[in-house]
Amino acid sequence: MSTMTRPTYLYYTATTLDGFIADENDSLDWLLSQPLGEGSLLDYDTFYAEVGALVMGSTTYEWVLRHEGGSGEGGSAWPYDRPTFVFSHRDLQPVTEDVTILSGTPEEHRPALEAAAGDGAVWIVGGGDLVAQFARAGLLDEVMVSIAPVTLGAGRPLLGGRFDLELREYGRNEAFLEARYALVGERA
Image (cartoon, rainbow, N blue to C red; front, side, top):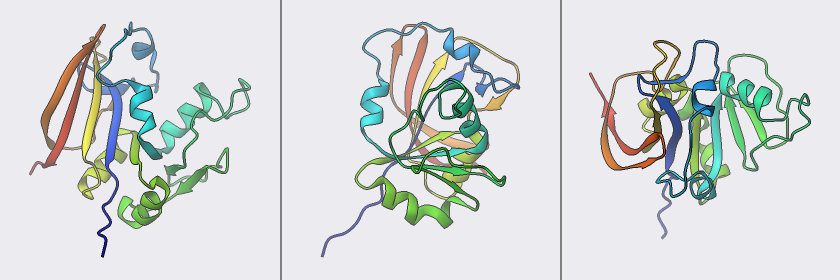
């Protein structure tokens, strides 16, 4: 009898030194202006090759549509070639057959997420409040974060909640400090 293991749930993102993934206007200008080099600990292509499915909130989804493609404005296609699940309480439209709009909790949709991921990981793209919901549900294993030498003072938080993490690995890519953390649990 074989025992099925669940996929790994990963949060791969970038943050400012003061813990924001976007400014109060959902801009990533602070991130896109930073230099990147070769030999990254958190190499995107290596990371993405392990991903079987993506999860994101509606704000992230709409940002991707506006800036990365799929909206028809720039003529680009949806940038991901994996099943993508968008958690939202609003009436959003999927831009491709690979995008599914969901409402509810991570626990409710866990079977569908894990079936879609197959042998790959589930990438929780963002935002921080959605990531916290996954963490509280026991569905966040690792936080992989590139920390930029920028402070914003306000904006969208990296992780919406109080959690203990354990540093597993760290490195540098030009301006960024890169770190891998295991989620220990929620703080009281």
